Amino acid sequence: IRMGRRRRLSFYMCGRFAHLYKWLDVWAFAAPFGQDIADPPVRYNVPPKASVPLLRAIDGTPEAAMLQWWLVPHWSKTPDTRYTTFNAKSEDAASKPAFREPFRKRRCVIPASGFFEWQRLPGGRKQPKYIYRADGDVLYFAGLWDRWVGPDGDETLDSCTVLTTDSNAEMREVHSRMPCILERSEVEAWVLDPSSEPDSPKRLLRPAADGVLAMHDVDPAVGNVRHDGPQLIESGHGLF
Image (cartoon, rainbow, N blue to C red; front, side, top):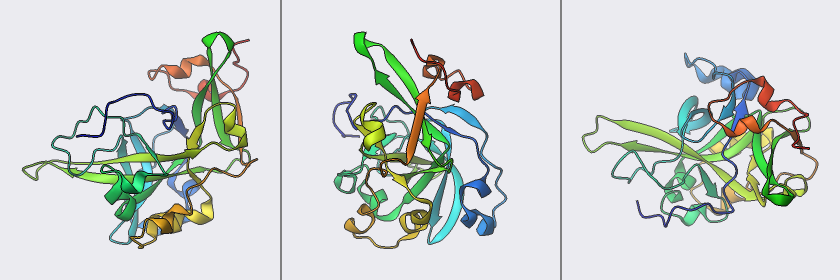
């Protein structure tokens, strides 16, 4: 896959989030799915390439699903890519080869209870923050998904990415970018809007309004993907 050299760019968010809900907590729209799908496992430290819950539409029919959080484009020769695709910059995703078709046809929402970002402190140290909605509602990350099919047609992989945008007032002191967060009332429009015009869904991709988010310091243990538990989102774990 030719997507440029792999490097840590400023539009990548930290790449960790938590989800602590059931499908019916996420979207009342989940009730008529008609699927026999188990609720997502509770996770406090979800890393890229993990299986994550999302809401998408197949041929106009909504469904809940668990997909790999690291998008593999449908045109990739293999299901493995060394390029960083767990995030995509919303400002140009509609024109990038890896994301162009998903932006038009395969949009999704990745629900989260909160996400983590690391704030750089004087001296080079980094303090992890847990970031969540101040009103306690679910965070709805705008995302894209794609389906890779093996050359023999006997292997498939569905995968996804989270779109990012400029930071709002709360996030600006921590990182220059943040996930594109949809309001609950915007979820259906993002997932089900049949328009193939890139400018139509772009109106939903902007920084969260100031005051929407809250955050607190958490244990640096969240930096290790082997750690997973409620202690990772508890406050009062500053480095000082």
